[in-house]
Length: 309
Image (tube, rainbow, N blue to C red):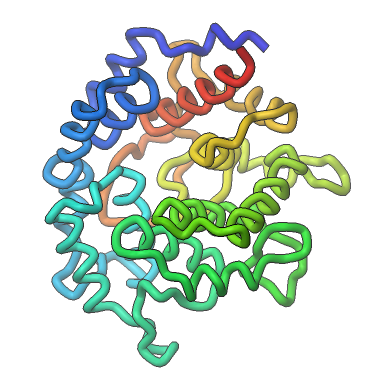
């Protein structure tokens, strides 16, 4: 594999930096190695400029976001704010998450507080990560998720009816457990559960059936943002990078897919948009160059190449 061809060129970096603060600060951290102070200054703008400020402004005084089923629109909005890198200590983040904590409950679950989660592990993985990042780690929710891990190493919202894990659910739980550990809750049980789930993905080369070797879902070879609950190869690889997993031969084929998705201009396009909506438009033109996909692809390639060199 010709890794050098995929190093970001100055024009790619300039294009990424000519963007929203959420993209800029992550480019500075993940691709150009800027000083921590400069990164922090740029990151602080997420709360007051661009996509982050727009999404914060659309939260209702009661804590939710409009536009559909309140609990899911709120969940996807919170996930995007986390992905944007909204600084948890900022006054805007504190006000926002306090509204969620004080105003939102799951009424059918005896008014269980929103940040305590509900019944499906895909949703609870997301809520665990959001709570650990923006508020505090929820030990009961983490314990619940560990108890729901299936024998093959992953999770499935259809369990116990289905005993076979789902990539979609598994990646949501993995991301949540990683954030939970980063919030100071590292333990042998959590680490072992994550390792089992990471091996579930890796043993399947991130997109192939363990039994037949066939591609499980060709949609996973197409990249989108926001991902909401959907799995794809780029999301899986970006998780492994974020978790500082050393890449091995099991990711080679997935990396080839990432490379093949690059356009001749060195940018990665938005391949599709998922049907779920949040009250914010970022990149919406399918087929056009996507800064989100380009940023994530370049940092995944950097992670992969650094281990190969």
